[in-house]
Length: 113
Image 1 (cartoon, rainbow, N blue to C red):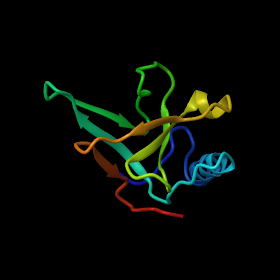
Image 2: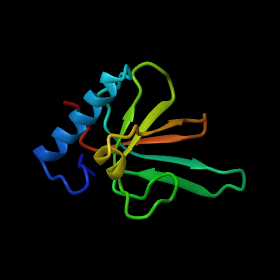
Image 3: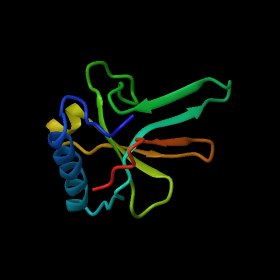
């Protein structure tokens, strides 16, 4: 699937992605240009879990879609999950530390602007 931001088609999605990165940078949190579509991991029972752009938030909060997932530029295996409500309210994104068994899925188009 090619890069997108939910409810923000085309250039609007690019602007939101750049804005989210710039906002994190203002707080000293560098991000890479990688465009991540999903994070996948398995729990101790082998059940698959995921966080996906356009999907629900990591806490399972309804009606608060994941808008973008940003990779930390400073720390290995750290990502920031930006949701609609957190972006709109100026709140920080969820910070997730990825375990060794996590899989990171990029958008197919490899877009990095």
